[in-house]
Image (cartoon, rainbow, N blue to C red; front, top):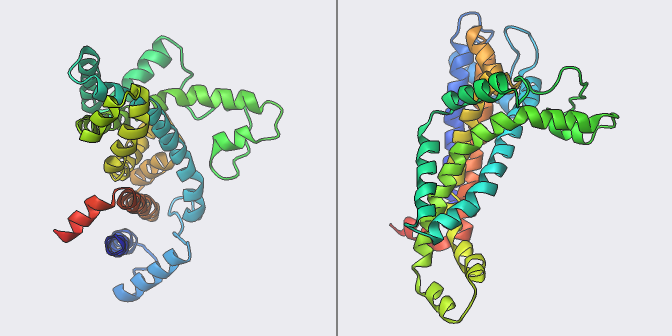
Length: 320
């Protein structure tokens, strides 16, 4: 297992290095870049040194520090990702257990239809549909924006919900409630894709575990179904699907940036969309480096956690 983890760390470092080549190309080759006056190898050394110092450069449009820009927009995006994952897990795990326990029954067939629809419908189309239906026609959800502009929120770290919860402002609970109302649609739309994947993967894992002899032995001892599910099935069904969570995170992060544009969310997706429209290559480079590094590191962590929780599988992979 230690050899596998060291190999994954080495592969991660190589992937991060390749990612810096992409970011450097976006900064070096466009006409007018300050690095263009330097030779390629020297310019890349300067770029890599700045990255290691936490300096992502400055925007061509505003002239502001991109490090500060990423620190303020990325947390807004992560808020949507984290809340969407919480909703996906809260709903997806019990639904997957029901589908796995009642395999080929009516409830399982209905869940499979939901999974098929949720994984097939494009997220951007569903976001537009829900926006028109629930916001403009029915009026159940406020118009898209992160929060009511009448409220004053002290944005210290980019996590506006956290700031609203722990603000000393007298109406902070009104701000929090308003944010939750505005956030309900994008969070629900974003949770559908990971929810369907969690249901599909965990259902298959539950079905495979339920066939094992030790589950039949536990049932023959008179243990209740709840005890069997909680103590035996879930304990063994989760480890095989843990590495898939890193893939789901990268997919969810991409979908979040698309949904941000539709719901006018002030996250990194809107920032990159504005940079693409105005050909602000340093901002595009900073966004690629930030998001790519986060996805690579999350995949590394999930692989390591998966190898620790399910060491036999990774031992077999290493042997072969």
